[in-house]
Length: 115
Length: 114
Image 1 (cartoon, rainbow over the protein chains, first blue to last red):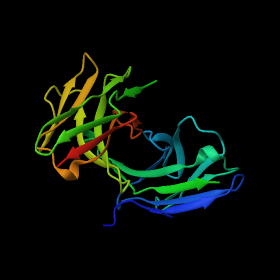
Image 2 (cartoon, rainbow over the protein chains, first blue to last red; image 1 turned 135 degrees about the vertical axis):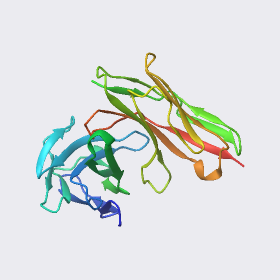
Image 3 (cartoon, rainbow over the protein chains, first blue to last red; image 1 turned 90 degrees about the vertical axis):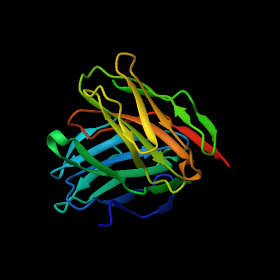
Image 4 (cartoon, rainbow over the protein chains, first blue to last red; image 1 turned 45 degrees about the vertical axis):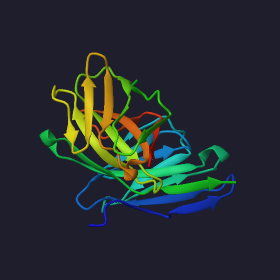
């Protein structure tokens, strides 16, 4: 099992462009959450997808959108990039085990630089 | 709104010694989980330890243990017999029961001195 994978590892974009980041969850996990981690900060929750729908959303503008596919993989799209969007974007996949709690794993992240 | 506060931006400890990282939090929920995550330079966020709020017993995982004070909303991490591989950013995090969404603190950078 490869765990949670993300692609690409790094990318550089120009202000105003659009970007798509990808996440493949750990096998058996059905929920994907996305986080933005600015340099020197803790991760901030962007949104969460379950059953191909956005289930929760953090305090991020509509420029941030996402999608979940039938195989549970997910994409994060950011439009009209700003310099402030430069960050490490983390994907976490999870599975609710009921009384046993929630099993959640993070991917290695995608480092986005906006110039 | 939930908040998690880590007041120690940086900590250092001699190899083989013990260090304690502090975390306070605020939530209006009665059922929740608390976590400590480790983020080495490789950037991978790794779960170190988890505490269910309804459990009075403090969680332990090998050299890692927590001091959970529910009334004080305090959740500290103790690392015993510190090893060079423990050097990393450590994040305290909170989630509500049945909800995967995590609220993170700003992190503590731990340096291990050989």
